[in-house]
Image 1 (cartoon, rainbow, N blue to C red):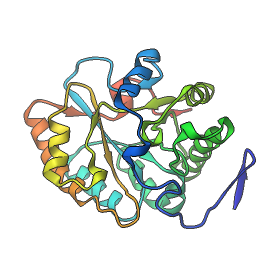
Image 2: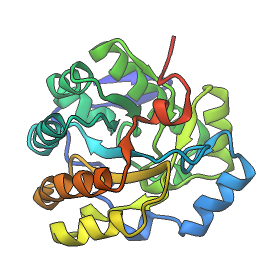
Image 3: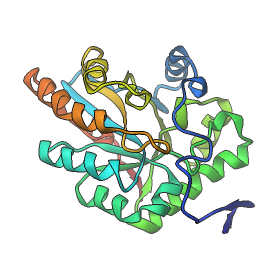
Length: 249
């Protein structure tokens, strides 16, 4: 056990998420994503700022010892760099996988410590979820992320205030693979390819809840990359897409 900002955290092997796996019920409507982006276009990121024919693949909920390594191997074979939005408790449990993510040239972002819906927490708990994760990543790979992917894409004015105070940015997406929801690899690929646009940010996953398989994500990735490359797309990390640093210095 250890304490940060008055909150007690458990270093033991975590459950997949204290607050459960991905859930449609926890996600705000997509219109809310767009609304926050229109109000805070430099803080709430949905896509790249230009119209270059490039795509940013992002992977949530890792690292774990099963699916994240498989996805890393596929990305290595495809020569694609991506952005991994990491859960703090899983970094504690799988530090070697996070080290591999960085060693292989991918970018690390913050995805909270316990994967809660941040809009349901008090201000100081929101702050602790974010800062404890950054501190855990810093201890593991000596990097301090600037980007937060809020669990479920859920944000409100309080989350925005905390992010501004921490000099971070909120990383959302405009293409959702829905790969966590039990789709086939063909359906995962279709969700991505049918909604792609220049400088899209694609949401996928590199870990799931207990017993959840991401084999269809692993199987869909080569097809997604090959089709997009045939259409003239390249692949970027989030900082490359935005022309901004990935980490605090």
